[in-house]
Amino acid sequence: MSKVFVIHENDAWVEPLRAAFARLGTPYEEWFLDEGALDLTTPPPEGVFYNRMSASSHTRGHTYAPEYAGAVIEHLERHGRAVVNGRRALQLELSKVAQYAALAGFDIPTPPTIAVVGTQHLAAAAEKLGFPVILKHNRAGKGLGVQLILSAAALSEAVAKIAADPDPFAAPRDGVWLVQRYIEAPEPFITRAEFINGKFLYAVRVDTSEGFELCPADVCALEPGAVCPAVAPGEKFRIIEGFTHPLLPRMEAFLRANGVGVGAIEFITDRAGDTFAYDVNTNTNYNSDAEARAGQSGMGAIAQFLTGLLQQQQAKAA
Image (cartoon, rainbow, N blue to C red; front, side, top):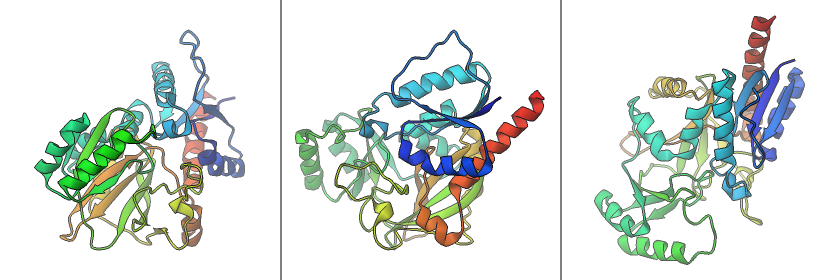
């Protein structure tokens, strides 16, 4: 009997999906892709495959999990299996440069950005954009490495600290830095729009007053002893009732065209009322407190979506 296969590398982030599958009685199996062997001579099983591989896998010791997942997805698509968030979605998850190029194709504004390889080129990039700037990793996840840089002196200090930092996550996993014009919002918050099956589900207002690590999951795998903003006191995350925005149809079209069946787009609106998208998440998570207050369930909606795809597949095979 065919089933749903969940590709991932973080048990904690899958727990709400397990509960949702249990409520629906959906047959499923998890493929935890960290290390292992992929036999290219053997066809994969029948079923629906849901890729939840994360750009931040290296922070949990799963350094090559995305590359392994990429190989598995190639094998699945070669054999015509149904893959939700396939190869293109994984590419977007791992590269903000790829995200911005793709968003531009749908007239979705992004902050002016310069990609840099080699820290000696950061100063020139920042000067070209003009301070203040945001310094971030091309491949990161959880807001890892994001810094607000106010001046050339502050940038020099930040680069020196990064060079001396023994933390292996201080530098981007792929060696690509992004220098980005700082978009100042009238209030300290960003908006995260969630989409399932290419359709808008809901939007979350996320308080940024405490920093840039904005993982909405109830369990965030930060450094030992760190506090996850998702469980900080107060309403760090709040679902916005009746949210609308003129960019939503373009975002839906962008996600469908790029094979992102489940994902989120984070954006910010400046003082002039202009909106800029700055991050695409294809391994989306949800905050249970915010959902409970709003009567929503992102993982429940994902489980229903995947179960529907499986039932369609089973009906065709009958």
